[in-house]
Length: 611
Image 1 (cartoon, rainbow, N blue to C red):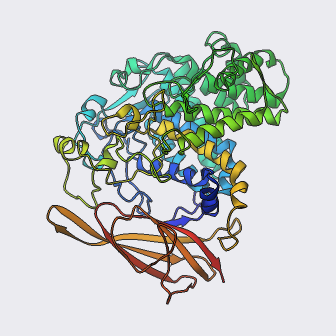
Image 2: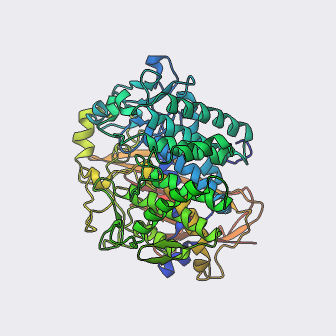
Image 3: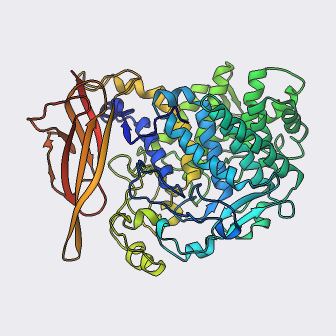
């Protein structure tokens, strides 16, 4: 990891396509990818880095595990609350790693590999801590019931942080299996960048799979407090899932033998499903093993792998509405609709899975054969694109269900941290009752924009109610956002050239050695007018390249007050540098200030020219 720059510089990737995308109506998948990483950063527990991009978040959960004499600091909060649930967290890391493996070239080309690897490692470092012995895995920190009695910031947590573990007497094959899968997939993601860390992840993955397989049981029987929130429907799929990932990571015959010998008994070759999620991994197993089959072509195990592929085809045909009536439901606006509660997580996971399967079919020069006809791999990608576009605003509501993307998005997110003023603005603790009275029930928009959060989304008729109390539709989850990393990377690589052609010739042009510009935000003063608090924000911009730049244009969004030090242009929310400051030399800085209530505005570099 030492070779990757994790500084405070804003990497100017995806900005090249922004104006063209706006002009053509195309979704800006590069921007959406970057915002997805920002949401994952907002969900981090533990000691946060000083150069974090989500400035309204602070350190939290710094004593997690201490009552049981184990270090469980770190990891991710699963949604709008502050419990660290092991099963959705591990699934999310698996999805992050899979996206990074499949689309390494695309993510690298977007200069997002640093963010991708850190997003994975924030989870895997925690899993390593939680796996204290070969047959011990700490599977949860915090209790959902007591946590939900409070509406408080993570930084103020006063609820119990009880930790729960799995061991030989309290097994959890589903949770241990999913964590093994996450570590095996992550070992592949890290292999080209940090081989020693990759090897360490693989050691833990093998031990956890052995633990999951030898001592079988449902994790929520051993951790009953998880049952109300993330109840497991079984563990056979996770055992096959872990073995399939270990097969990919190691190539060892024992894992191929496991998925072949247990395919029928554990349902991998027999169960046809229309869902892929943190709970149900069968479609993922079937598509992963179909990839193994198409890459190897033949072999002693080909007949069993073809049975897995037949079920992968069932899933894909159901999504494509070609499955003889046994299809995934679509809303009138065209969104896959699987469950009432947080449906977007199922749509995002299925879309990513279809993208991967489309690539496998294309590489094998094969078509998807469905009961209602054949489907070309490109047709699958077109459908995947329709799902991503729906998420980003091409829907009956013309609303982006990714917070902070586009002109219209949810502003009353069911998320404690987003809905309460940041500790940098409101340093005094917010108590449980105070949080409900003063923040949860307030009618105003969230004081903190939780960029990149994919909310639960609309109902089966494309209706959406942007209310903080409407947790089925307005709560975001890491398990919904993690598949978007691979999905957006794939779509950006396919469609960004269309947008480039629309860009005016004066816009930024640069090679893969992209220019970086550092933005430093600070609050220099605050004052009250009646009950309203105003803040003076200062933004310092530094040219960190080795060249002079001119004709700088900035986009300043979510600005509600006056601004000084920039010159407005004819384009809304777009500003230039003052007339007297036409050129920024290498290493030089300039500053501007603005005054407003609440959180800082969002500043990005829109265009410039080299001299």
